[in-house]
Length: 348
Ligand code: 5AD
Ligand code: FES
Image (tube, rainbow, N blue to C red; front, top):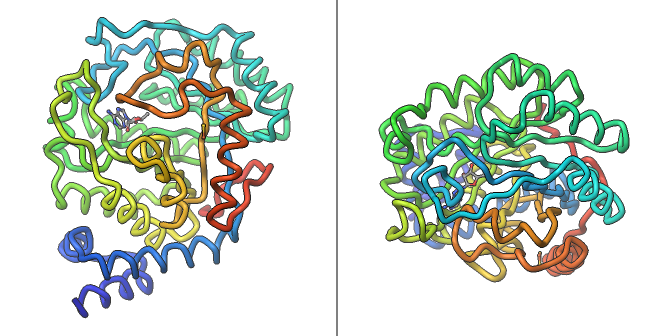
């Protein structure tokens, strides 16, 4: 046990570990886990104080040409009711969000060919023109270098593209053959080169994932050195090939958040909606484990249930204002405050 505590101290000092040391830490006992958590919380406070940033998530299309085995909006899910928000719907989400104090808008969608680069650029330009003090984050999946460049030139500031798993064999078990880890990693590298603030990330407890895969994720993240890392538990969706697999656990998800906080002290780490879905106090626990971002939904309530990546997603019946107020109380309950700010990463 003593050697496990030493591993946490080593991670804190050197900001990385070897693959086998990461595997040991991923499998650690509860005492070590609590020590890890307390240092991760301390590190969050040293770098970001008690401030928690909020991002307004606008899930603007659930059409998707990809077929990830874990995802509820995969193209093969024929029982998923599809929708697209119009330009004016999206601008209305931003207007409501701005009034509620949001200073980052995240445009997230499936890989939907209807939204051509021209259409995406029109949206980015309109948001940046109307709200010059806000950041625009994109989460649109894999695109060409040219497309990524155009969005950036139109004013997009950040891009979220979870790598999902950094283990090649594991990636192959989560996706059809034509979706590859190489192309995912290539996209992340291009995004960095262009100058985006980049977010990668992975699910905890996805089918066929072992501690070795998670160790690969950590080594990959260390090397990429992103500004953000999105980590949430895998949760099965009834209409996917993974419907019969169990969800990722709260404990392991929190442990991974803490390890990433210690590895990259200045990274932005969201306490995800998936975490809130597996535990009623998931987001609060995420913050106590080192997270410093929340990303509530700003989409119209009429479409929220349709953006169902996994079963039982929380906050699909609540209005944006309700979630904002609910989150504020939750964040204050763990001694933090929700701030009105763009909240750029200090990991530059
Ligand atoms: N459970 C948890 N997270 C999921 N995502 C997709 N499907 C699921 C699921 N069943 C995550 C992926 C994706 C992000 C938008 O949502 O990591 O990158
Ligand atoms: Fe949506 Fe609590 S955050 S209801």
